[in-house]
Length: 155
Image 1 (cartoon, rainbow, N blue to C red):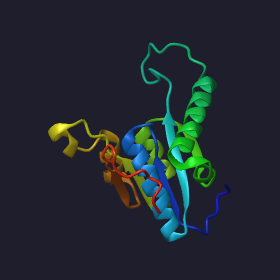
Image 2 (spheres, one colour):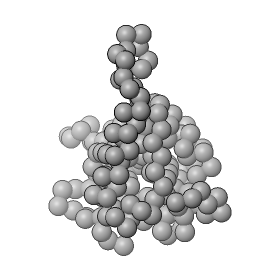
Image 3 (tube, rainbow, N blue to C red):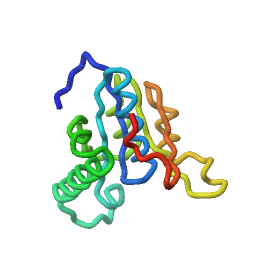
Image 4 (cartoon, helix red, strand yellow):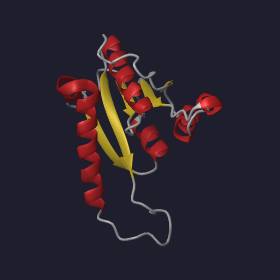
């Protein structure tokens, strides 16, 4: 998928969690309503990249694994046709910073909220809270769908 700058762009962060899957489905539906495109963003970083004692790790291997997992996840959540309709961006760095950078000049940034059960479900995760405070576009925070709830296949 090319970078059509004449169409509104919706950016969605995906991390494999149920709430990010709900965010992905929401972003695709919203982009369809506004005639926009969807950029699916995955952030990755080297383990211990910010510490002085990090182990030597092959950075290309980590990115290849992230790309493969993203491809599988998109097919699982959106189906093959839906997965082919979005653009994927695998970017190295802090998740919140990567999402903010990807969402520059976007119509909206969509992220999941990772509830932990009980009262904590009402609390936002650190990434969603950070992007909500710092993004230059509207931010949509999507909670995970209840088990046995929506299938994501609805129009």
